[in-house]
Amino acid sequence: MDFLAGLFSANVVITALELGCIYALVALALFLSFRVLNIADMTTDGAFTLGCAVSATFAVAGHPILGLPAAMLAGACAGSVTAFLQTKLRIPSILAGIITNTGLYTVNLAVMGFSSNVNMMKAATVFSMVQPVFGKALYKLVPVAILIACVGILLALFLKTRLGLSIRATGDNPDMVRASSINTGFTITVGLCLSNSFTALSGAVLAQYQKTADINLGTGMVIIGLASLIIGETLMPKGKPWMKILGAILGSIVYRFIIAIALRLDLPSECLKLISAVIVALAIGLPAIQASLKPATAKGGK
Image (cartoon, rainbow, N blue to C red; front, side, top):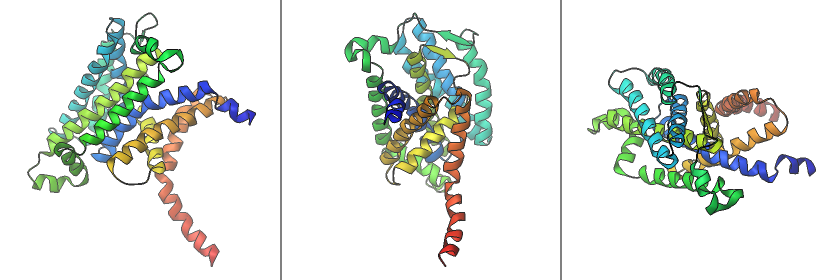
């Protein structure tokens, strides 16, 4: 019991919940691009760093609240570039994302004043502004929980609209959508702009959360988002979009608890990316593992 109490102290639980809610935006972004649109969007890493850079720049300039929608707009622009490469230039989706992600490295450096990091220790953030309202213990958790709840609800409602249904149909059967005179290029563009705006918003909130922005903050973010998404899919049964959205959020929180436990067990922080990769590999390969074990089980039963 003492061991478990050490692993799950109040501070560890609150921090895991805070980071889980922040990174859940990336999971929702990948849910929209990877699951709904059926597109492997590799812009995620660069869009996340772009959100960090824009948010930090605005916060240092004295406009932390304005930095959040500005980051979303910047992320949407990054998504539109990927969509343009894919829909207009007929570049495969993975290559389009890689090209945009590569270009974003220079863009992110330019936004940060060609510095590899931006320090916001002396700048006001959205969290320091709401601290008198929510108190010292929960001034970070409550705002990010409200944010992810609002984004999740709005996304679920959006997917029920005519445009949302068209985006879902584009991912399921693009040929049928084209036959129905729906512009698949437009639906893909809207979906990628929206997903990358979520990713950038996650980076924007994280930058103000930890009061620093670094050019390498987005490295491996696509794996973290996929891990959260896949964990959520195992927790929630298959069903309506709102259940999948809730699963993505819960998966992100569970993933942060896994990382928190790893850190409490004194595993080197350099191993966290490897842990994420293993989680994703096992989760994706689980059906194949189960299928390979069934014949052995059947033979054993005979």
